[in-house]
Length: 297
Ligand code: GUN
Image: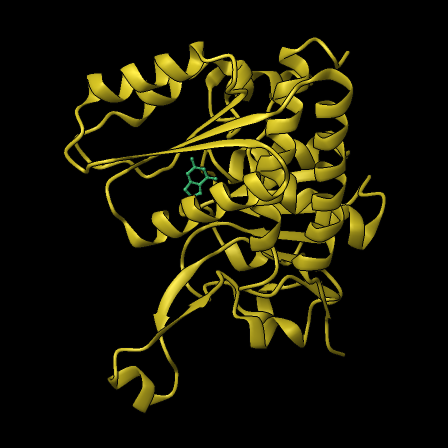
């Protein structure tokens, strides 16, 4: 048996069309143009490419979009001043400070300074708390994207055993909460979990969000399970000539080749979860704009 491949792009395109249509409607009916501000500190190449894509895709959806690129030696108080200005800017409904920040900056303090109503990353403690409490919250984009793919693949998730490997604030913790809200039985596994392969084998839904290339092996997967691979890891090519030339490629946290033989369905890396993330950011910006304008119950 070979697993069904869960392609992110077609689902992302459907969602993008909905968001774009809703932005057009808001502009026409309410003179409201959702606005997103993205802040990048420093010149990490991966962050630069993500930020570029966020800027381009928000503009393409008809949003107001501003990208602030600050030098790597930006001081904490300067960054906090920018966040305060964006909090006060009526044209901006969503604020995203790209992580990780350079080491001398205090990430937690910066995230706490963002107005929770504009926190389209869902990282502020208010949004994390609202998610746990079952109240309307802005929720991190990657976990929301994973849930959309899971629902598109499996339909109703109630009663399924879900194992989330990884406990980060940006992915592991929020996706565990979303799975719980969808009535899954949820286990959060991490680096101290005993017999991780056995825990993974209990999963009907296995979410890998650890940031370790190909860590999850085929024999850790229950036959027929749905596997969501959130990992984005840069590794040398398997081909020795290409590797010697310094060429790299992107792989997930799951050993894809092995998993294909066991899983019922699996997201590839790239082209699985990746395309969903920015679309979910656009959706969060739209939601934030509507709530700030009093247009959503
Ligand atoms: N770095 C990698 N992914 C993300 C994300 O979703 N949000 C932010 N702010 N930084 C990131």
